[in-house]
Length: 198
Image (cartoon, rainbow, N blue to C red; front, side, top):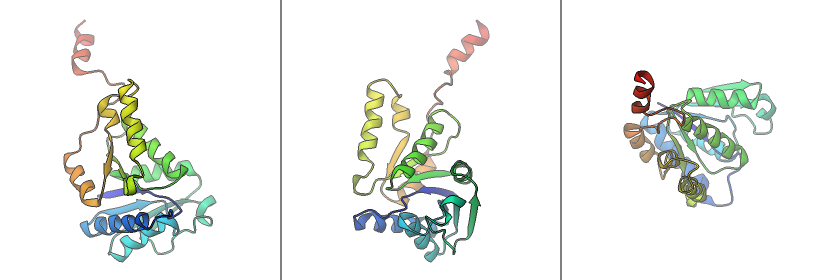
């Protein structure tokens, strides 16, 4: 299994962010899962890569040439893909992963998370999208998703399809039970039958 992780290029201002990111990566590596991430050696990205590698895991980085210097591309990865654009980075990270985990991060992490979550809701893929909710970092986003469902902008299943996890064990358990929401524009089976026979 390959787990795509989105994480900040900073470590944040609380030790718990780096501590939990490292523990998560180590647990994944020890379970035999490979990690796909943004390819940097700084911030939570670097913490994830270093922890997984130290635990004997396989780590695959994807970084655009424009950020290879700014994010200081990691030089000790199992594989490093250097691509031309941010869009190529996101597409390759999405295609390589069997599921997605967003760790605390800034606007780039938010954008990556929203993109794969929207693709799940629209039925472009059926892979789990999760958030590592260290220090309740993602709690307000989860509340916003619930509010969107309350006001009719999402279905309850769509809202609940962004799943909080506290550790890698919860992610691995989710993989065994995961059922994606019905794609947004897919008609129910009964409606399809009416269209065929009507």
